[in-house]
Length: 129
Image (cartoon, rainbow, N blue to C red):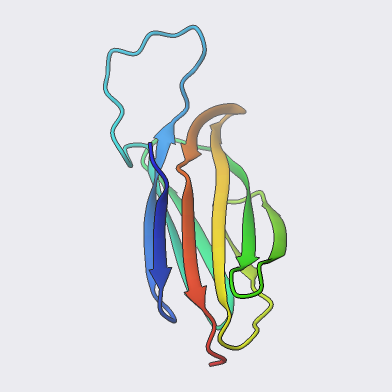
């Protein structure tokens, strides 16, 4: 599956799919389509990225990281570890800077990995609202 990229205006939201984790040693007779296991939504507002993971299959936990890069300066904004289905990560809030946020992670059912995020990048220009 290829990478997905979106550029947001203040307060807009984008959705990305969650895809099945292939279990080693198992045979799958069903096709896996984009977003059949869940959806990630990312919203950017007031210098903060907000994410939510909506699962279409049973899941008990989500573990991942939200990484931000200041595309204007080229400096990494750091990596924020995530241990829940929703959360927020602030940018450095520099006026007119373009930020790229990427959520990576895995959803689990009773400790067994069931779905991964797809490669994604959400771009957002902070305009000092």
